[in-house]
Image 1: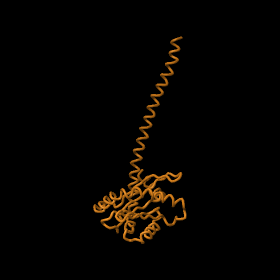
Image 2: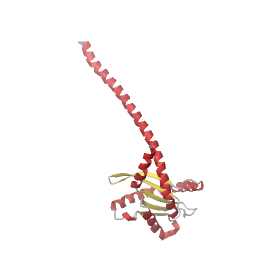
Image 3: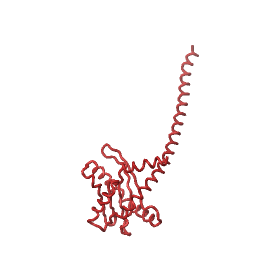
Image 4: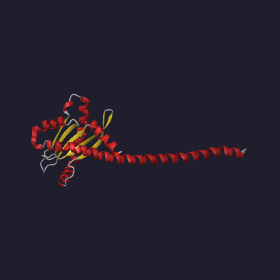
Amino acid sequence: MLLTLELAIILPAASLMAFSILNLRHIQRDKAIEAAIQRDFTVVLHIAEKKTWMKASELLTPVRREFPCPEEGSKIKPELDRVLADHPEFLYAILYDKDDDLWIWRSQPGRDADEAFRKRVADAAAIANKWIPVEAPGYVHNLRKAVEEDESPFAYYGFWMDHEDEHSYSSVALFVPDKAPKDHITLGVVGFDPEYLRKSFCPAVMTAV
């Protein structure tokens, strides 16, 4: 009777332990597979991202030449509006100059009537206003150096932002406008439309795969 009772206790416990060990190994194996998939997908994303930004650089080259400079005064806003009208793939454009304490931003003029859009873009510009003045000297130094070394004159920055119940990814391109004074810390910034990025990014992912 005592032996039967001991077996009744030990056998289920042993079975449970064996199941736990097997389950743990299964979980570990699944995690290893998941990690491998994530690593592979990350590599694909890096390749796709590089291809996407190569396309973006071609798009931005004329924009960098056309972008206004701080000395243009009252012409800056109309010039930014013209850049946006010519490039609907941008949600907004910013001209920042540290030396002149200048910060001017304009949103896509064709969507002024969309209040939700205007608020979302205003939020994005407000976020940019916090980090661009801090990061501008480093960006300008590196971008000018890149131009001297015949490398890409563009930098890209992405960030997540929350607007009401929407969690969205924003991506911007930064460059030193062609007409900017050589001794100034000046940045041109354009924010990409996420729909444009999706259309450009997804084919690049498929090509990378």
